[in-house]
Image 1 (cartoon, chains in turn orange, brown):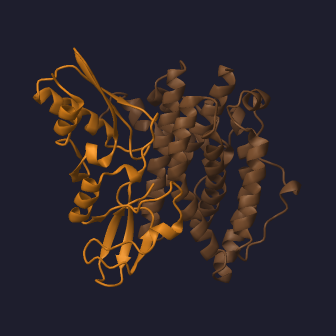
Image 2: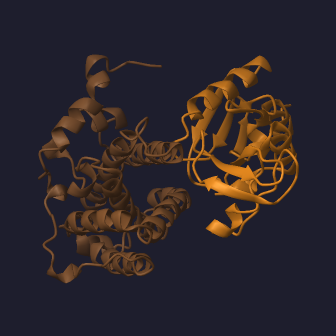
Image 3: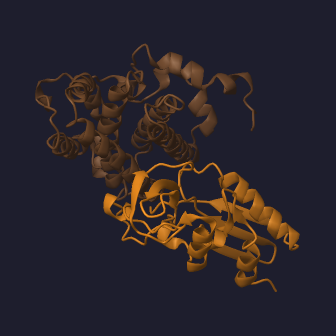
Length: 159
Length: 251
C-alpha cells in the first residue's frame, strides 16, 4: 500500500533544476498528493508564474515515480493554492544557504524594500549588506553585496 | 457569469502583458547598466509568463491554444492599450512607461485578487506578489532619476508628457464595464484610474518632476478595440517569426 508519505519521500529526489540541492517538496511547490488504486495525482504550483522550469519539473516527477513502479502519474499545475517563499521548509532553507543562496526572509505576505536590505550574507553571515537589484539571473533571485566580506551574493527572493 | 465580459477583460490584460513583455525583452543586451539589462529582461519573463497564464484561462473558457492566440493574430485582433506597443525609445521613455503601466497593473491585480471569478482571483493573488518587484523597481528609479540632474529630470519630464495620454488609454472604458462591476468580476476601469492617479501623483510628488494636468489631456483610446499605432504589426511579425516558420519548434 503506497502512502502519501512514501510519495513525498520519493519526490525528495526531484530537485529544482536551477537549484539542484533543493527538492520540490522542500521548495514547497507540491501542494497535494492524491492516491487511488490506479493512479497518483500530484498537484503543484509554480514559484513564479513565468517559471520556465515547470515542464522539466513535471517530467521529473513522472520519471521518478515511474522508477518506483507507479506507472500512472498525473501532474496538475494550478494556482488554487499560491506559492509564497514562506512555504520553503527549514531543511530547504538550510540547503539554500549551503548552496550559497541566501534564504528568503519570512514575511507577512507584503514584501517591501525594507526586508530586502541587510540580508545575511551566505558566505560570511554578516548582515551588513545592500541590495544591488531586485532582479537576478533567474526570476526568483535578487542580487546583493556584502560590505563585510566584499562578495556579491544572490538571494532567493521573498515573495 | 457574463462570459463575453470576462473574456474581454482577460484578453486586454493578457495582450498588455505579452506586448510589454516583448518590448521589455528588447532591452536584453542593451540596458544602460547591467542591472537594468537584467531587470527589464526579468520583467519581460514575468510578463510573458503572466500573459500565458491568462491565455490559459481563456483557453479553458473555449478560446484557442495560448501559443496560437499569442502568435497567430494580426494587430487589429489585439486588445492591448497603445502605451505598451510604442517603441522603447531611450531608457527614460521605457522607464516612465514601466512606471505608469506597472503602477496600474499592480492595482488591477490587487483588485482582481477579490474577483468573483475564482480562477482569476487565484492567479491575481500570485501575480500581485510578483508585481511588487516591478513597482518597487520603477519607483526607485523614478525617485532617483527624477531628482538627480538637470538632464535626467528634463528627459523624464519630456517622456512623462509624451506617455501620459497613452497611459490614460489603459483605462479605455469596456462595453461590459457595468456587467463586470455588478457581477463582482472587476471593480472597473474608472475605479482603477482613480487609485492609479493618486499613486502616480504620490511618487511624482517625491521628485522634481511636474505632474501634467491629467484632466486636460486626450486619452489615446482605441487599443482595446483593435485600433493600434503603426508600431504594433512589425512587433507581432518579429515576435511570431519562429512560430510561423515552425509551429512545433522546441528548445
